[in-house]
Image (cartoon, rainbow, N blue to C red):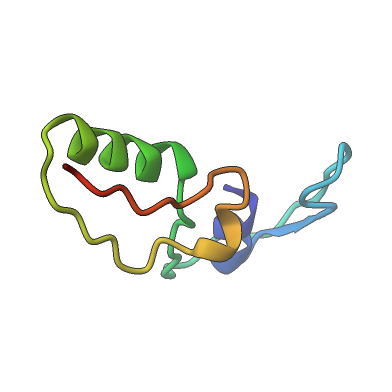
Length: 77
């Protein structure tokens, strides 16, 4: 949220730490921001494909942010 607000013209520093420093600004403006991947959502889709024995291809999941899950190829017999 802080990064998005900064795109809109806010002045927030300390993002990712336990202390935020917020300096007021006169106004915000429009902007665009892409929300990063959510590993829980990715795992949920993988789980749904496993349970239904379906096929799944996930694009642009940001694999560099998914260290907490291990991708394993599952072969059905």
